[in-house]
Length: 433
Ligand code: AMP
Ligand code: GLY
Image (cartoon, rainbow, N blue to C red; front, top):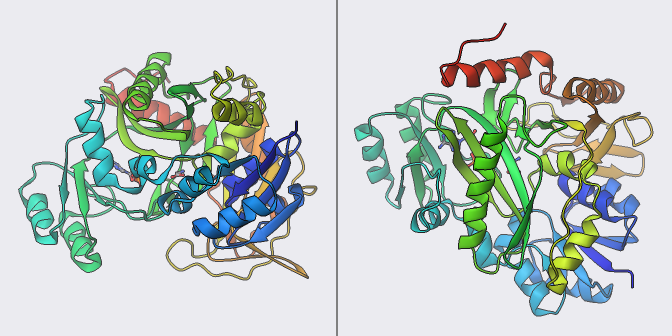
């Protein structure tokens, strides 16, 4: 029997999920924004408030969904997966209590500590701004300042990297967040490993490096993620197999500690001189990382989610031995002062060899326009990172630069070399020129 799947969410990540499912299932989709890429793949697309559990369940019931996949974190925080499960529609996504591993960074650190998960940095949680500021004054070393709640990846400030201690304190006082997590600044190279999780089992996917900073050379404010790359192996060029294995051991410990978790568990790690440390966990696919993972996943995604629902062993995953490079085009001024309304002059055909994933765009009668969030991503898939990068760049050129901006450095040989050299330096190894 063919499954009827409701996909919740309308970003680039969800476009990649839609593409991974569309051929094998009857697909319906809903989101606050009408994503033209998803709408083109789905039997029907309904615009609704994706964080409203009742609205999502009503649509899932109306289309007789047998399964649901929830992409973004906001619906998870609001209990959309709980409501779907209660209505008898299995959601491949964690319920709100389980999603707290992402939605509450204070809970996250305390949970990791309680379960003695390796790689958890030193941290303190504050509900009083002045106590947090006093801690910054007293602490010997740099700290990362994190609002405990969801901020779309844009709320973290790292002292010694993005700001001074004084600026960090001003940030805390200005925003008056309910709770603030202060944690040891980790130094190294970041990477992501995502796992499919259900019924106490998990299956891991290749490592990916995202680029959070807005501008080339890792300058500027944090964004939702400007682009990302993965290699033809499970590791990245600056990592060893042992580094990857150490990250999987951390994921293994977290899955064992989580009770009843289902969906994607996203581990963000800092590869330090002492091995991988935990930057954070998310309760969903990364965006952009889903656009690296799903195009090379050869096992049908539907097989994973039906096995999860039916309590069967998860299939072992097959991946193409190919590298991927994903680059986002974002509106001029993003993320601090984004200008919307530029025409998006690219479609799936003109993207050439690259895959095109739409994100926050406004599909009008006369064309597709940018909004104030990330607009679309192009993904090159090839034998090497360098070839995949060239494919992504070719597509960006076709899209033109008017009103849009990208990070052209992502996946380029120079940047890869810098990452490798950085790790070698941290580990005290001699550089190989
Ligand atoms: P998050 O929202 O937790 O992913 O944080 C956003 C970004 O801030 C991460 O991708 C890192 O680049 C940086 N970051 C977060 N926590 C730390 C930390 N403890 N040390 C250094 N950088 C961090
Ligand atoms: N790529 C970072 C995130 O999805 O949170």
